[in-house]
Structures are given as structure tokens and as C-alpha cells.
Length: 350
Image (cartoon, rainbow, N blue to C red; front, side, top):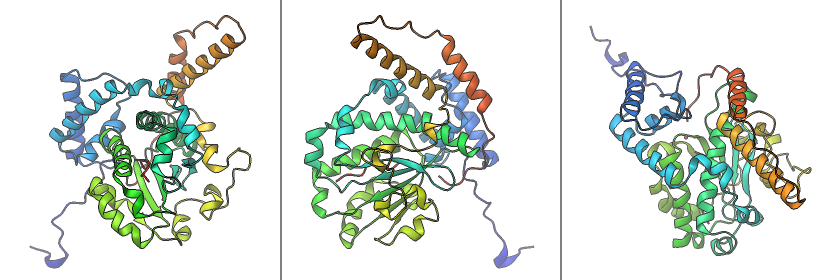
């Protein structure tokens, strides 16, 4: 007999995270892995179940669409040398640009996710492009996404003793005007959004857009078509009184004073946006992040040796990476049930 109005024909939907999958989603993940193996697409150990599930969630577990996305992603990684991005892309001009374009990671939210702040209305796009080229910005985004996946997320997971695979972002639009949306600026926004949505899907948990004005509504009509519906749901838009809502997610001690929080990072020259404070300074990265750190350390030693006229130190033994891998395996923690999910805000433009 029917239970009338109270009956529910719709099964409870599962999020598609590791500990919240339906039987059908689990089967699709196995099918995805089987196709990757059968077509010899990759044997790279970085593509574990957590990594592959991000692509499946992004394409609503449609295996054909997921395969198209994943194959394009693998080709893109080769083209842009993403495996080496943390080591080879130095991006010196981006650091100079940070003085007019303050942005970066600043601690974590209350759940232990990396907290990213972007302030794209502090500068004029032409001024930014005088300091840093579009090409350097592109590889900078690639490097930072790789660092997020292989350094920040693993460190945050170790610090909070649960699996962290998403970030919390705040986009401060103070100073926004329609003049900020000329074609050059729109292209800058699209560049950042495309890298994230095409190659690093499902890594943004939530994004607060704050200090918005009525002018922003017109701009949102231009920006929002670049975003998929799922991403738009993760975005909440606020005026200048956003702190009460923000503090439900991020402790005031992790929010810069300039945004109504309590932090000044007085120990760092330049303050909060130059400090890069967070668990990644104390806890280990994964094996890929640790290998990149080791390579950068060796480079630094060689540079010092060269300036002092000394012979460079011998290369590290091949055992180093295995040691790091073993350490990471021992540190691995049981992932908690992840909450909802998606990507660090691609620097929106201005």
C-alpha cells in the first residue's frame, strides 16, 4: 500500500565522497580504474581513489564524460609539466605583484581546511600585467594548485586527523567597479577559472564573496556563466557586514584584521598576505610534495655552493623518496566522512 504524501520514492542521494558512496557510485569508481588500467592511461600513484572521485563527482558519475575530462587532464599535465610545477616554476614576478595584489592562504577554517583569501579589486589589470605576464600567472596557478593538492591538503589532514581535500575561500571585492570588467580583466578571470574547473575539480568547499555592492550584481551576470551550477551553490554573496557569518566557518584569529578579524601577522614583513601561515609549515606533505621540497632544498644548496665557489653537494640517494613515502604511510590517518565539496578561488580578476 502507498504511504501517500509521506512516501518517498527518491533514494537518499550520496555525495560521492569516499565514505559516502552509493553502490552504483562504487561500481562506477571501479569501472573508471579498470578503464585507466586497460587503456594504460597512467600508473601514477598520485591518482588514488580520492583523486579519481573528484573527477567523477565533477561529471556526476557519468563515466563517459569523466573519461573525456580525465584524458584531457592527463594531456594538459604533460603539456604544462604539472608533475614538476612545484620545482620548476619560480614565478619571481608574482611575489612582486603581491604588493599590489594581496592574496594567499592564511591558516584554516574551523574544520581544518586551508583558508584562501583573494583581493582582486586592489589593483588595475594593466598595472598587474606590467609586473607579471599572463604566461607567468598561468604557471603560477598550476604551481599553487599542485601545492594545494600535495602540500597543503596532506598537512591539514595530518593536523586535523581527518581527510581534508577541499579549501574555504574568501573573495574580497572592496573597490569593485564595472570598469574592472573590461575584456583584459575578463580573460584573466576566465584563465584562472578554467585551470581550476578543468584540471582541479571539486576542491572548493565554500566561497564567501564579500564587500559586494549593487554594481556587483551586473558584474555577476557576466562572471557567473563561467561557473557550473554546482560551484555556484557553494558561493555565498555578502555586503560589508559579513563577519558574523564568516566566523561560523573561520575563527577570528585566522582572519586578517583588515577583514574584521584579529590577525595582523606582525611577525611577517608585509603582514598576513605574505605570511603563508598554516599547518603546511609544521606538518609533512605527501610523497610528491616532500619530493618537491627536497628538490628545492638541493637547488638552494647548489646555489649557495656556487656563490661561495664550493663544489655542489652530492645528489641525494634514491633512498630519500622511499624514506619519505614510508614516513607518509606511517602518518596516514583514517579519513573522516568528508562534508560537501570543490577549488581554491581562482583569482578572480580585476
